[in-house]
Image (cartoon, rainbow, N blue to C red):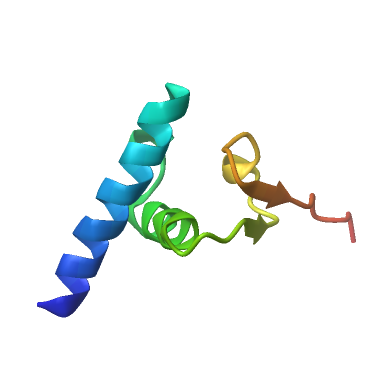
Length: 68
């Protein structure tokens, strides 16, 4: 399946990126979050998010939610 292949490709790409900086946070992310993060990195983009569990990852622009 093309989606499964793309997910594996994205996970390999992000693993290679993280090997270079000595971090492996994908094991701490839910599968959907890991796919989103890997897709952004594989595409050469930064990830803009308000989800705190992404905050310390490389190439993430974290914007905390404002209290309502």
